[in-house]
Amino acid sequence: MPEEQPAGARPDPRLDQLRDALAAVRARIDRAAGAAGRQERPPRLIVVTKFHPAEDVRRLAALGVTDVGENRDQEAAAKAAALPGLDLRWHFIGQLQSNKAKSVVKYAHAVHSVDRPQLAAALEKAMAAEQERTGRPPLDCFIQVNLNDADDGAAGHRGGAAPDAIPGLADQLAGSAGLRLAGLMAVAPLGADPAPAFEKLAGLSARLTAVHPGATGISAGMSQDLEQAIRFGATHLRVGSDILGPRPALG
Image (cartoon, rainbow, N blue to C red):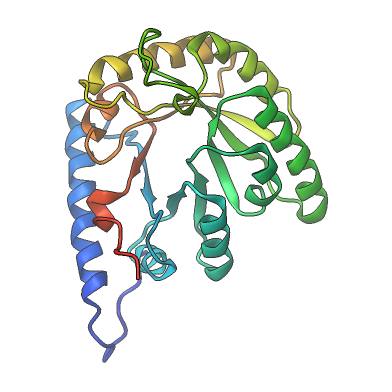
């Protein structure tokens, strides 16, 4: 249950701001889940806290948030270390260099951006050492898929793995000790209607689960397109700006 402010506590306008924004996003999710006939299986909300201070994460935990997302290892590792005991699940959602795998497995519940065999191998190696050291549970791994059209030159490596690379990467993850193939992740192409992209992702997910029945996760949907993502079966939403507001000014 969310914590209440202690009697006599100093007012915290930022906490009130986050409470209101979180309630508004949860209401959007409830409406979209209802429209999609998914009231009994709503998606999990991951609040993306990148660029925002650890104190905001603490406030979110007090408001009942259990899942937070970060896209830079240095920032995520520092926040996780600063906030022990909050029972949060940390989701790594950004592009990940293989040499950061050893750090990420120390705090991450899931990595949503596995897009190449080398990264999967690095995570398996890092998890072997981390599980021997701490006995931590397996790391959930989502394959990031590039949903841009093949002739879209803007897609580039940052968009994730090509759809035809999914089967091989899925088999590798499923066969890796310490890793759990969780499903697929994607970002809708910029400047386009997200619905066709999310419909394509749903089809790719159906093909994946035909071979790997446990890999039912679909990580899709952000502040601007969460309704469409829910319509096409998203199980995990990654929402940042509509809850936390714009990136804080530097300095």
